[in-house]
Image (cartoon, rainbow, N blue to C red; front, side):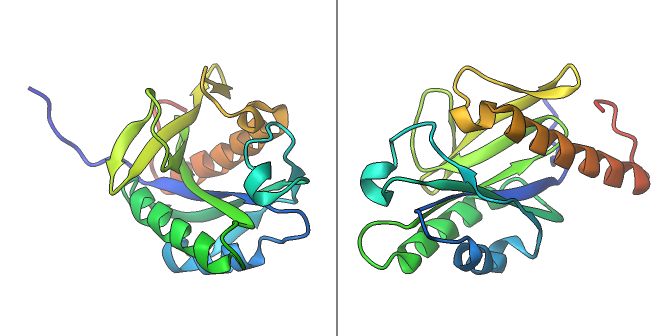
Length: 182
């Protein structure tokens, strides 16, 4: 018989996709209501991996990651995704979005995203939200999976999450917790 336990806290982040000429400020400030204060906002990265969003958001899209330091419980991801979907609509000047906000989290073992889209490898979390593990930590670095989005496969994004993981690991050590999987 299994013994149910509460998972360790995780660290949240946002993956923002911005229309050309837009900045992340409105989305970042809006998400503070459910995510808290940011600790790092990356410079925009050209998002040219797919044309999937161009019909709605136009060409020249940019990816920005926004990270938080305060740990959270993983189930908070559902609340954050629902809030993000509403914020996307409030920010949009028309029916077309100018920002796509995907809340996610990372811990020592994985980088996970929330989504409203079903796929066979995604787990249902509740209220229309699915969880999607994008990267797993193995052999000293985060590694892509067969379904990992192309931008998350890039060396720059993997190193970004490796760096955030190191900072999280160091905070756990300072806090008196030695993690076996480090």
